[in-house]
Length: 182
Image (cartoon, rainbow, N blue to C red; front, side):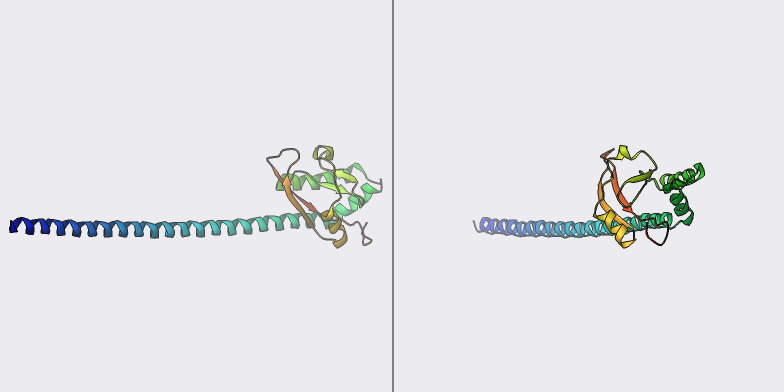
């Protein structure tokens, strides 16, 4: 009988020891997985943050490039002269073609949706394509700020009226024919 009690105690002790080892291994494994999960999550968050920062820089560069395009077009003296002739009804077919060619070059190279030239009241004087297809040209704060500050202003990002899957971003740039800001 003594032998059975000792044997039962040894078996019980073995079971307890194995149980403690099993719990320890389970806890260690669970802790390791939690640490790995947190490490992986942090790595993914860092990666997404880098992607976001890169995209923000790319978008900023893209916007600056568009602003530079509009500044270059607006500061082109030959374009201003042809526009002045066009607006004073002294234009020739060459003037009109030159304006259309300049605007079309930006359209094709930069993939712009359209380009408009308006007077100070907002009346469309020249458009690369029929502006009626693009909805009315509204005078808004950005347009007014571009005129007052003589600088490029960017409108709000919005969905295209023609194709809602496309995003549209308007840039407003005054083109002055002379120093009187007409």
